[in-house]
Amino acid sequence: MPAVVIGIRSALAVGITSALWFATAWPNGPAAVVVAAVVCSLLAALAQPDKIGMAAAATVLITAIPAFAPQFYLMPLAVDFPSAALGPIELSRQRPSLLRCASILPARLARTARDHTCAC
Image 1 (cartoon, rainbow, N blue to C red):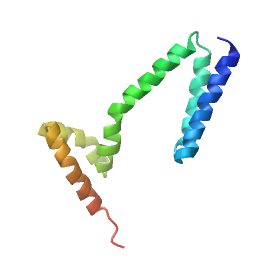
Image 2: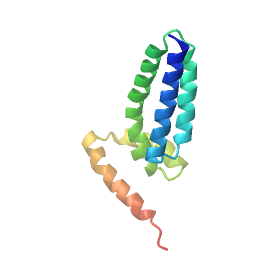
Image 3: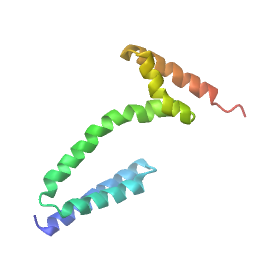
Image 4: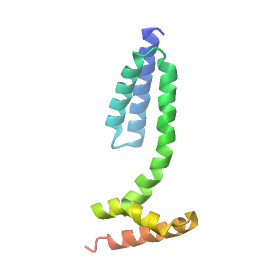
């Protein structure tokens, strides 16, 4: 593949990532732009950068789905290291069903929000 096409593709990837950063005011946008530039430069030297790039993008999207729930639903419940480290063990010991987890989580979130509100 000609170097010009790879350069245009890399410029588009960095430009789209930068536009997403500016449009959403994403706090980690600069890191995303740097990662996009580094990934594009690493993939450009490979024999089939288009196929490997698509496989890498698919892998990132597939792994982001199971990482979403712990990041945005379980980690906010952890207020210190023991609760973060032992929380999954406690949940596995109780053997909760999916329906029970769905009913417990909003109550825990509400209780956590109520307990951590500022009374100033």
